[in-house]
Length: 141
Length: 141
Length: 141
Length: 141
Image (tube, rainbow over the protein chains, first blue to last red):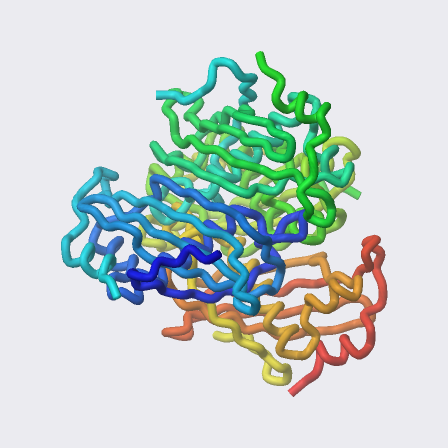
């Protein structure tokens, strides 16, 4: 069921569903999973030694240029959710992250997705990702 | 540049960027475009005579099971954004919507995406979309 | 029932409740009313000729330093809500806005609140509000 | 500087600022502190043995009827923030929570606030808070 890669470093982040994240169907509103992916991506970058805050302090940004997500099972208020994050591909100017969210208690997969990012400078122009950061981000097991 | 279909009814919704929708890059945070797609979808359903509130009052729900979005150009606080919404495909149990967001002033395309929905009942079980609603939702020009 | 002042310019903004703004109680999550107040404040500033975007372009910012809100009746998905906004007080470095949100259809008051803002420069230091802007913002009927 | 009460049980929750929570001023958008208060309130209720999920499963709800917050210092993306939560007062039908958010690293207070809740049933009618829950929620040190 799970789509986790076996040849990548996968970083897990656990979070608890906020009431603010639910909607009138009684479950988590769909864009919040994508915000959780952002949380997972932040943890991943810290874990790999390339904290995204440092990127921005250096004048480099990684805006999202593409996102996709499939929803498999709903989460509810108070649930503990684990987000697994890995790098699918790091190229000279782009990085692609993969994600999977599952229920901590049961392991049931809730959602799976990916985001593509392009590296830009303060002026918003695409630039090369510094090679040491690309290496840190895409280090394998 | 635009990806608007020529053989579908396309419903436009205009909204102004809220400060709450911006992020530390000074532009709209990426999941908010997907929330705007939800706004567009609501307008579309009202326009076609199948207000989504009526669906829920009848015990039918259309949760999102898949979403994708490409980001082409950023919007900023106070910008007027037009969301175009159409139905790509309506099947017995699923509906696929297409969206494009552009700047009202310049016509520049900001983002384009799609969502896939499955029709479920109060118990969350997939059910057939009533044919009259499917017809209303997928009526062509 | 209403708390609208009679001696101030009151600017109305109408918005429709988004599904993303609802929560598992089936009604609008409480912080979203405060985001609607932000929408109302933006409309108010534009209406008075002192568009908040111009403030920021001039290097002046009006962060919220205090907020309060009372909730009287819930709004639901698809409801049309009218936010009334006015300036309660404009001083040399602070502005206080008042707000009331009501259902467009019935006039029923949903929430009422206020925000206090301090004028700061790019460095975050409190500065005087330019007198012409203070005058525009606090112009009376 | 801190407003923490000395005679109450104060429950701490730590969270990391999400990029989604920042705005174009480069800092956390003001309503997100109030969402963090909700997170703190959830932790408080779990800690006291009266998990809010159990309330809802029993058909009791605690909607917010009043909120206020003062903002003292901004938080930024990636900051670790500690939210302290306590019960100011528990009456037969209402509960008042107090909150304070500070930077984990420096102890600097970021925001302080309170929320008032009324206990309602599924029909939204005010009802008495079961005395055992009121006792659990308001237990003192």
